[in-house]
Length: 103
Image 1 (cartoon, rainbow, N blue to C red):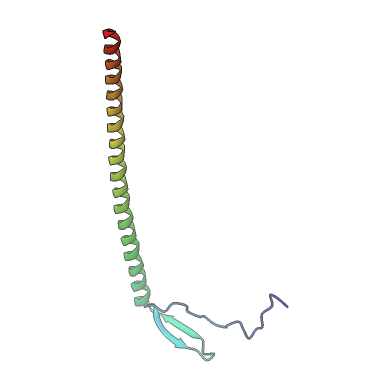
Image 2 (image 1 turned 90 degrees about the horizontal axis):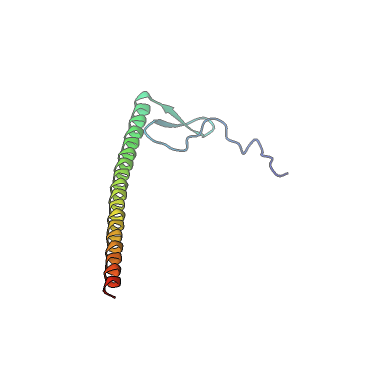
């Protein structure tokens, strides 16, 4: 039947999928891989994760600051173009008025 598993297929005991600096791998009597964790290994792992987190946060802050600078620059460009546009509209109106006065 679908969905049923034999008891032979299911592993017994802990299996480690990643071997890092957490402990030493051992094979138990069922030839299953087990790890005994040490405090030094756990602390080293936590320190590594803390460093990675700090690196990611620093990269994120740098990227955020770059985007803020780019946004500020683009906003100032928009304001400059709007001011130029207003000035040009005023000049056009002034020239149209002068042209009407000459006729």
